[in-house]
Length: 151
Image (cartoon, rainbow, N blue to C red; front, side, top):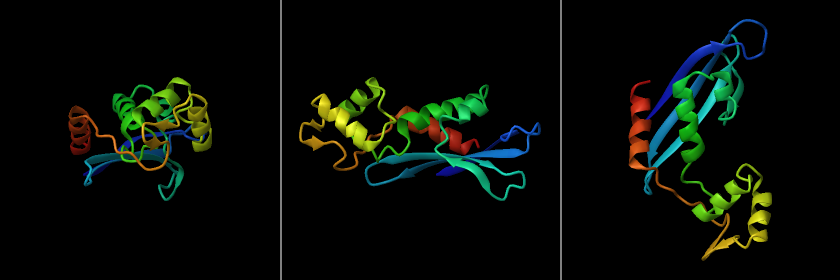
């Protein structure tokens, strides 16, 4: 199930006119491992024919819509659960990266950091050797479904 959420137009280029539409695409799909959440956003040119900024805009959206509760909540969910079937590390490895402020660092830098603290191997798992699926809590799945159904 998926939806496209259309947000109010903004003045993305700072020209004094709100001419840029913004859309958020939200999807929750069933896989053999469980439900997978994905989300992306885009800012459209004034004619709506092409995006002038798009992709993983979770840092930018709250700045563009600081008072929008739906945007705020979607970004919170996005940061925790986006592509929950593509985690490079175990929960311990990911927590260590987060605690060190390296959750957004490049893969090589993350691996080097984990080696430096003796956590590159977590049990039998070598960081980044395969994708790890992390299930989304049922209450969050229900919330995502409601967002999709209501938009």
